[in-house]
Structure formats: C-alpha cells, structure tokens
Image 1 (cartoon, rainbow, N blue to C red):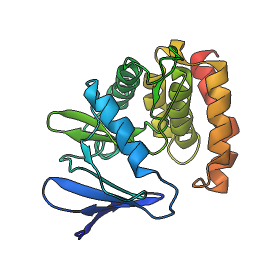
Image 2 (cartoon, rainbow, N blue to C red; image 1 turned 90 degrees about the horizontal axis):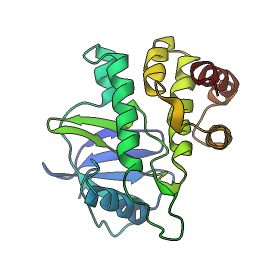
Image 3 (spheres, rainbow, N blue to C red; image 1 turned 180 degrees about the vertical axis):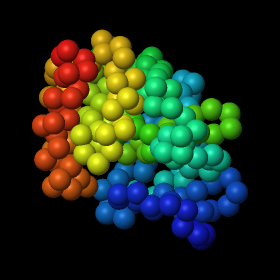
Image 4 (spheres, helix red, strand yellow; image 1 turned 30 degrees about the horizontal axis):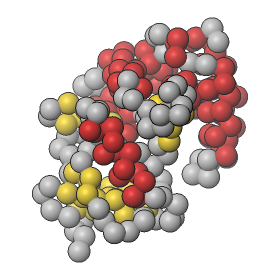
Length: 217
C-alpha cells in the first residue's frame, strides 16, 4: 500500500511508503524500473550520490530511499544558493559521474550518462547532494551528458527565466567536455521528447545559439 502523494513530475508521481522509502510510479508506462534501479545501484556502488533502491516487482514502479531536504531548484529560486554555486555543483556532479567506470568493457570510452541532470533532479540532503530520476540513463560519450544538461538549462534561459543564464554559464565555465556531436545529439533528442511542449521545442534554436556564445563551440 502506498501513502500520500509527495510530488509529481511530467511523467511520474511519487508516493510515501514509510519514513525510509518512497514509490515513484510512471503514469505513462514508458519506464523500466528494473533497469533504472540497476544503474542507480551500479553508480552508487562506485561512490556516486544516487539514492538506494530496492526491488518493486513492477516495470513502472521504483522503490527508493526517501530523501530529506529540498531540491536544488527550490534553493536556487529562494536565493539560498547562487547561480554560480549551482552551476559549479552540476558540473561537479557530471564529472563525478563520468569518473565511474563504464559498464561495457568492450567500449572503454563509454560512461554512464544521466541525460537529465538539472536542478530539479538534485536533492540537497543534509549529508550532501543526491541525484534522482535516472529514467533516461544509458551508456555513451560524456559529451552527450554535458550537452543535455546545457540544452535543458539554455531552453529555460531563453524562455521564461533569463535569470538562469548565470547558472548555465557556471555549468559551462570549463566547456572542454562539450562536443559538437554531443550538442547535435542532445538537440535532436530534445526535439523528439514527447513530454516537451511545442513552445519548448521552438526554443531549441535560440538555446543552441546561447550555448555556442558561451562556449565558442
């Protein structure tokens, strides 16, 4: 039995189980909870700050550790964290993730990619940040992960929240991990993302221009 609804995202709802665990239920039936739990367990075993998970027996339901603390987005919006600090934290989380050994010995250059790392997917627990929502995770080149985070923030910066510009600039303060191939693929995937509005898709062109201005790519 699940308890009260704790929160909702674009495609999933999170319910209380007890003081230690929550259940995230995919509303659209797209997710693969077992695969997502496996990647979370893998990166956690290598020291990366992902929540603990346990089997749910369902393809669309993920049982995971209940985390205390706000999201990074909430702290940024309240002004308790500055955009420069937030961008630097996102960059450090990407670097830490890409330091985890890849899962495919046949492709030594591949790493685990989160592919949706932005402030609303970082929980600021008392003992440090935790990265949540690994639905899109896969193995691949790190440049794609950097590009996905940059495109997500750039869409917001050129849209309704220009204050996000300093956060994006801080994320890309060292743009060496960003690649042309990664940016092109990130833009392609965002354009095909069924959860995005038509307006968000229309902003991709301006988002790309902003990223290029900031990085010289």
